[in-house]
Picture 1: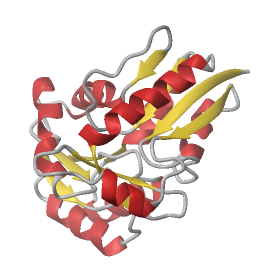
Picture 2: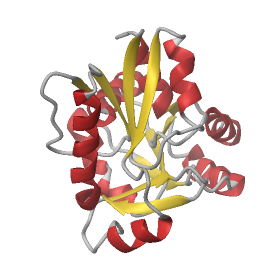
Picture 3: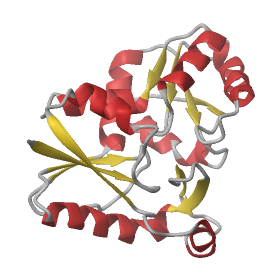
Length: 223
């Protein structure tokens, strides 16, 4: 059976997101999961990978359910090493389970599927000229993620709700903030689930797009 490598910037396995990917793979490929933070303790991550002033900020999930905040600049060399590891194991297609922007990642022969290259133009085709709302996990990400959308002609209106805190009130508040300012909402993190999408859709009354579902559907067509 063909294998699809999946790299989370947190710890593997991602029991929250993997079922969404596997649903669309429909047993056509084995999902091989690996994490940038595998084997690290939360205290180690906080001491060594926490963002400094001006860093591009990311968040992800540990296997115990805790969330952590990291610097892209500090984790990118580890991420590249994980890509190399999967490629050396013979995996030909590798999905990065993060919607953040990582300039300069590379493979030799494998195909690296980067959501930040795929989601903005895909969403632009879906949104057209309508108003575009985006929910992100961290307040610090609102402005750092804007440049991802501007090249395709999108001018997002942001709200914040973390997928890792299971706080329905935060999702409801974010949905209400966007309700009268947007026509379509994107959940811009691979950690959001179908339950998150339904909650935001119900509260806002708007169409809500799930990033990992977009990627799962597209990747399944390549297997």
